[in-house]
Amino acid sequence: MTYVVTEACIACKYTDCVSVCPVSCFHEGENFLVINPDECIDCCACEPECPTQAICADSDIPDNQAHCLEINAVFSGAKDPSEADTTGWSPHLVEAIKSADFEVWPKIEEQKDALDGADEAAKREGKAGELSPKPFKG
Ligand code: SF4
Ligand code: SF4
Image 1 (tube, rainbow, N blue to C red):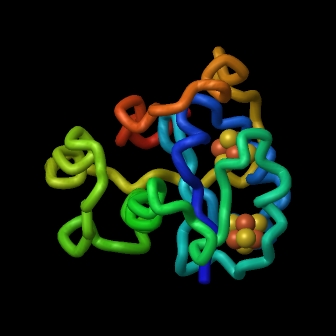
Image 2 (image 1 turned 45 degrees about the vertical axis):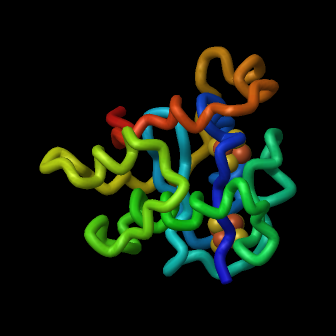
């Protein structure tokens, strides 16, 4: 089992989740976080911390977020892009992982300020097209 970050996190990135993870398995993109499923120890600590309820166990993931399992695996580096099942992904993400420019996202181990506009973004649905495939570059 693993925990998974779903699309409610897009454009928010409050990072409350990061501060409680005992094994530092979060990775950071420009406007989204993912969990490495090979490193997650299923402790559940992060789930209640997320202000947008973006995190859930893989066994509880809603059908319309099931594709996030593979997004978390690929962008955290747990799965090679060539082996990804991209069913349900936005086309721009499929393109991105096929690109020679694709990069696994770096780990994030400490909480930081949320993105500008996070509170407004937290109220929006249908954010899948906004998910940036780029790694966070400090
Ligand atoms: S706590 Fe913040 S960064 Fe973590 S998953 Fe939730 S919205 Fe994303
Ligand atoms: S369930 Fe635990 S180990 Fe897995 S990402 Fe959340 S805090 Fe980290």
